[in-house]
Length: 310
Length: 267
Image (tube, helix red, strand yellow):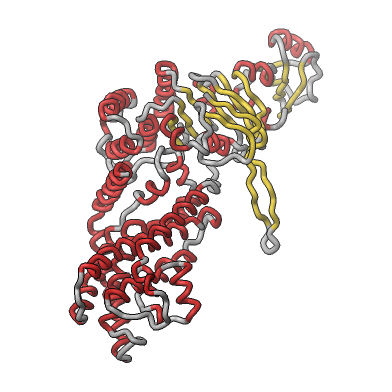
């Protein structure tokens, strides 16, 4: 569905107040990956890592500086219009609905922009009205919608023309727990039942953990991870943490099979692999324990560690 | 060819419905624009209160030029004057949204606003035209009627092309529409007067570079049966539609080139 080879985007920026020097910044630096039809893929990276720039090259918004992109068999920047008919895009922080008009009017306009046949439009809209529960606010002007309602509207708008591939940029940003869940359920349904390929950029690791099987991580313009979430945890997150509360403050414990990561008064954090029971027994032999707890690595921490180059 | 026009009408219809949500605001804007336009024409009358003629041009002849320019400009301003705000669309990166839709970006930008209030200026242009014709003794022939009828849409296309090329600058500067305003609003002002009152380089500029002289000056020479005192070729009097077509093609090409240089914004 998507093929990317050695894709690079350079921007020229000028710095300095008087003598403006040209600097070349590589926002995306020679990345390659493939996405198969029907995948639900997470694309992750810190701010400024090159996520949005990649998505913009995949959707034909930006012209790559070098490298090869093919989306649905088309080269995005030169066949933008053809590609636009087959993909849907939603940018959580941009409004693509008509601000002062009822939500339904936006759908009507998009129907004409995308030239969706009337009967197909009716079927699609009926389904979205049901799945995303749009009816209560279908005739409300967009400017009066809550964020959660508006995002549901934006999702519908991005999919009225039944795209094969959906790009979502921060689709759950700013939503409350219930609204987030609704959006996630919807994406899973669209992906599983209709086989729509979904590429999702997000900072919300909850989205990633609940939705995606495969994850791409980009930092400083380069891909630093391409694989499943399970493998990611295996590779970066095999270590767990044992948090022990001692009777009194002590020097960092010297225990076989673990290293102390942090000390705070009587509390110490030990990183270890393998069995927590064995480690606890060993710790108990060298110090008097008051309390203990085992912390599993969460994806957030894993990501923090790979960003840190760990 | 027809389908994009229908879509454009639909998009503009949506903008009109949007603005009619704020009826009071629209009415006040309309009144305000009308008032400004009225005062603007007073300036022409003030000049002729002090001098009987500008070169060979009488007050009614200048009013005729003024009216042709005003109508063309006002109609263009109403349809695509929002290109003044185009740099914002670039700066915020919202132009992205237009690029992921399967339509010409120019068509979508044209359809992204419609200024009802600027219709007031066209009404004023019409009123000035009536005033001008009342004082002129024109011999109407079929040729004259055709030239008059064609010169207004041709003028719109010429002004529109200047607007589009000006907006393209935003792809590189990301900001600042003021430079463009010098050619659109400034151009409107200059084209309201016979270009023979300007110095030679400015005249050439208006005839050959930014072809605003074709909006009204050259057609008016024919309609009023005057000669260009500086001896520019008479064929230019009929060249407005051709100039408009060329200007539109140039604007379209510049736009296409500019879109490929779009850098978007973060987010």
